[in-house]
Amino acid sequence: MGSAPANVREICRARRADGPAAILAIGTANPANCVLQDEFPDFYFGATKSEHLTGLQDKFTRLCQKLGVRKRYLHHTEELLGAHPEFLDPHAPSLDARLDIAKAAVPELAAEASRRAIAEWGRPAADITHLVVTTNSGAHMPGVDFRLVPLLGLRPTVRRTMLYLNGCFAGAAALRIAKDVAENNRGARVLVVSAEITVQLFTRPEEGCFQTLVNQGLFGDGAGAVVIGADPVMIRTPAVVRERPIFEIVSAAQAIVPDSEDVITMHVTKGGYGGDISTRQVLVLIGDNIERCLLDAFEPLGIGAGWNDLFWAVHPGSSPVLDQVDAVLRLKPEKLAASRRVLSEYGNMFGVTVIFVLDELRRRMEKEEEEGAPEWGALMAFGPGLTVETMVLHRCVAQGTGAAPPDKLAAA
Image 1: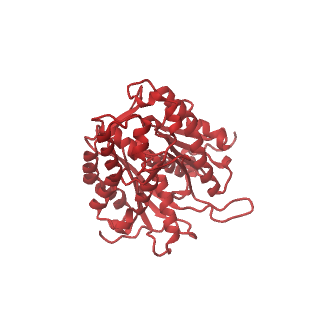
Image 2: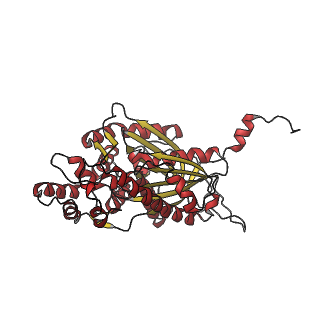
Image 3: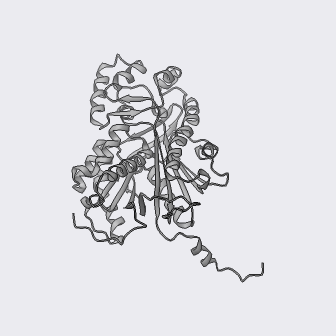
């Protein structure tokens, strides 16, 4: 090696991308089994042989009407539940059987969403350099990330990161990691995949267990995939496919709300997943902290606090959560329309949901005039802790090549 010694700092600088990470493609998928919320109380109490609990079923029916959900998709069907009577008893040892179901179903659902994202991206799956996968539906080794490599035709040298049990902020956390990877590895193309099935939560209703009713009425199954890369290829050549960035991820942050350790919890038990959500505390803590998180994200960029001048991708944990965000930030009714529609059509799919919101948001923007859609936006997700993920997004116009300087927005 006769050349002069390399400067380590120069090597590092040369390996970094020039611009911010961007979302280049989005894909989503759901199980075939669609359940309507109006019909679900009868199904649930029938499947769990709990029809005699008429008062509890009436309570559950009223709850289902307040969650903001119209329909959901579930991997567990009446036939699957019939084959596993142990799932009905929260005290029976059923974890192994539930994990076996997840081990087969989650990678397939994740692969379906990933194939759609890669197809939209337009380049071969082998061009993916990094893979970030998140799920709450199991904890296997090797995991979903390992299984996706042959399912998608990724290279065996793809660099994998697997995230387990991060709850509802998991999708946003995976996007944050992908941003860091893409910006620090020139030419990297990161596939982010979030996939969930909720068979781990299924059990019979019991008097005094309100959280069980919330779990059965709110959560759904699905998978979302996103291709992320910096410095997108903007000119098509015979050898290179032009990339079409959708949103640039300008900044990404995570914050723990103090004294919130017991507000949202989840743990593995012999009968599936247990845990609790203190709904009232969640709403109070979101209300007390959301604006501070947003100001911390936007002020360093020189963007003022004109919340109604932004577009919004908020994880729809439930209808009351969205109502709280609306009230605290004084948002116009249409600002959280994408989040409300995803909640209505799919339920809360944990970390997957925010990817569905991004997909819904970009479809709505494509229907608007270029001048009508806001240039800047915020992505927010809330999860165990209480943990808050906050991202600043920049909308990419069809012919654009990157972010414009951050002009000041009008005060709210």
